[in-house]
Image: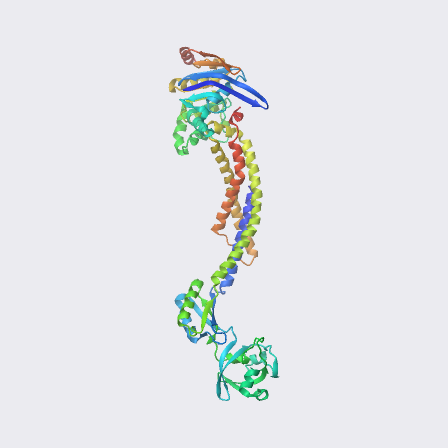
Length: 369
Length: 237
């Protein structure tokens, strides 16, 4: 029985710690420190040459109003740095494309100098212009350097000209410092929106409702698609992987249970041998061989399930002790109790059946002689 | 009630076969008290094993209340033993780690009764054998005679059709033996219990109605002892 106790203790400890890891991991992945959960809805434009922010203040207000869906905060983010802008060159409005950068862009300059992270930090109104755009709008390369371009009411000075080809990641007309470009228009535009749900909301379902709402009422709904990564599905996937790993390690620990089962079998054989007289008496007063088999099988199962109960208690205790030393709490579920109970019962049946059969098949005449 | 016809029994040991019972024909009527005598190895125990449904490997016909026993499965045999026969053994054959009450309850439990149903019956059986109040004792705390009484109570508990007693006084002193045999005669006279008893002791055998002597696997003699003289003997002791 000691073997059963040790086996069940190990299995329960591992499963409880595994459940603890799973719970802690999922909690960390899906919730902020206050227990709130966030999800991101992205906007993808239909025409890749057409740059649309996707979300603006109207969407912000729309989403924020959905308290009934558990929305507690909405934050518009800019993930894509390419935009369609209206630039004023020589008092003429031009529809151009621009890339907002944080650091020095890796472009090949053909004239002037590059912009840098310093330009970002001090919000310098400087930009780079592509060779083709320069030639089209300013006639000559030299005439372009130092020229002014008005974007969103800010006057930018052209400090460099770059060659854009298809291989370059910057195949827009302009490259400008992100911080300069976005100054004064915080939160009002972006192609991604981060929604924080209040604690306990059904995020997958509610996000689906929000996406449906955006498809009906979103400001840029006609020019692109809204989509979100279903964190619920992702998390359940991660949960499944952790569970699988836990059960795999438990199965290894469970091998000790089978070794313990052999001990049970040995013990039952001794019991059958020592109680031969009793078997004879029971058969003589009317027990059928099946009755005798059931009796010994039941005794084997009782032995293993009793070991299971003690092992379960010890397992819960040791998991709790381990969790004191670990950064997460052990979680023992009713499911693990059922699992341990079933395994010990099965071990009892498997290893009890042969001794029980031996008991049932004893020759009554020989015993009574 | 019991009808054995041309019963033969062989024991096989290696290549040797021993012919233990040879062409046994025997009829035991309901209410009879039969003593079976014979030397060791004569086949008495083999005979009562067959009569008591303990041994179903034999040649010939055994009909019990018009039912052919030879054609029964082990399971049916167990059922028949439980319902129709009570065994009393020489060395009592009680389970020592069970109380008197639990020992007596075993046949009832195998007959499908619950523990609560057995209480009254056990008390009645214990009263019948003169062991009132011994329910919770363990067999090893009782004398040989008391243990044999418990064993008789266990044999009677299912109200069997007949009792088989295999040298019931073999392990008892003469006084206790008398008491036990007296109990058997009372059972036979008052309750019309059919009793088949194996004994080596002629004095014990003479308390029965009929003495069958077995010799080398055959019935050497089958004699009535005289019912009236048995009555006188019983009343005289």
